[in-house]
Length: 297
Image (tube, rainbow, N blue to C red; front, side, top):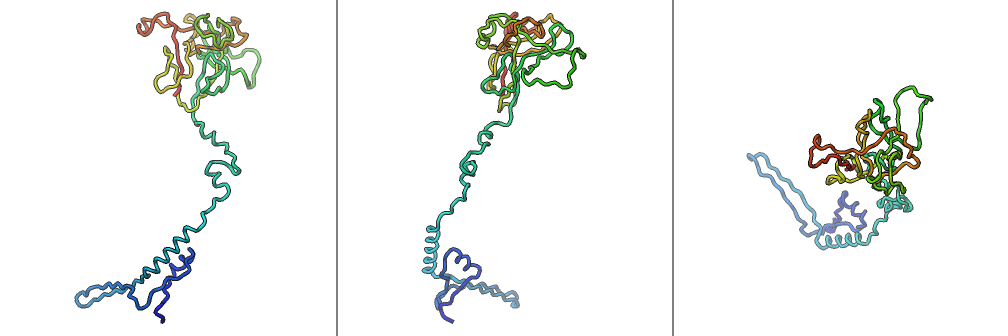
């Protein structure tokens, strides 16, 4: 056999060929290539172990040449090209460069909170108006009926199997302002100075990214970390009327329902005044009108 014997590793040579290395590795004959002899000692003069494992080394000159070829192969191989639409997908765009509709939708929080803005037909700039309406409740001089105030929509009113005339003896009335000039701001009253007897509008509001709301009486500002939605006056029914009503926070710059100044006396809203003595005197002063604020977080 020639001293120049080709040594091909069947598990290694094909993978090098796949990289473009075509010249096989070989061992120089007549040159000491390295031999590692592992021998076990004899035990009791009976057992003798000897393990002979030849290791074939490539000469340094040939190894250097192969490394050079491999380096040239890597540096000259063209960079992989992205398939059509790959970059578009990375940029969250559809094929052709059109932005997907979900880009802006993903920025909108998936949770929020709902509150009623009493006295205003639209919500603030930072809230969505779900619907606008008018304030309703039980009649001021009835013993029964509902005691809370409702925001009744003006558009899209629906009925289910209605019957004319009265059969059930529970009624909903519209609410009127029972307060004269000098308290509310007239900025949104359209040149009307006195809101007395006008119907009270309302709006149901959704504010995104908030999970709670609170109405705080006797305050015009919100606690730290809370956002102010609006402020105004605390209002409810007259103390001498038969029908008790809940307290609501009516916007300090209210709207008036146009053409509703007739004195119908359904549900009537009055400013609420503090009573010192039963309330702690000092922070509360008898006869002072209580304010309020609605906050979200």
